Length: 191
Image (tube, rainbow, N blue to C red; front, side, top):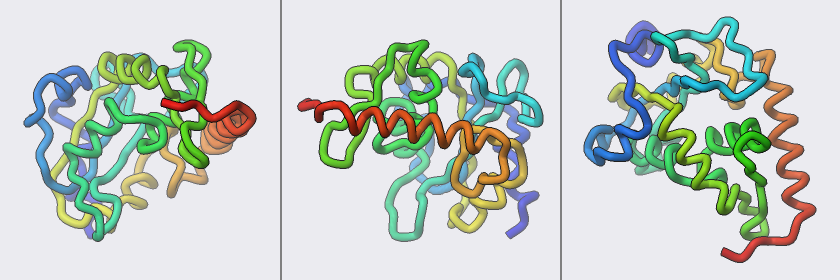
């Protein structure tokens, strides 16, 4: 693995707004590879120091699709899941929802014994992502072989896995755990 072959997420020529992806189903390819999320409007408290910029955007998160060899998920599936899925299926949505909860009026809740989402707030989070999140991707086979190295390469405050050394790790972990604890205290929502 040569990390130099994975420059595109960190030095993009172009990034795509969430809204563009949602309005054009074929924009993101149905293949495997890494992707990187840049943001325009940062949630309060996220450290920007050391993060890579692209114009007026800031790189905060890197992911891969599929997560493992046995998965059939593609870049298109994963990116769309982050944009319009729910917090149960997207660690990025869970983190952003916990950080934007007060601002957007989001509350993590149980919708099953173990499943937690922002229930009706997921729509607000999707709207925020469509307007403030920008993504770039690259087609590569077996991205799980480079994920940890990609995360260690730059400052990525919203990544938790492989990123325990980041200064924002304990803060984000605590926010997520507090939201989950509160959700466990609330009744299960029937949707």
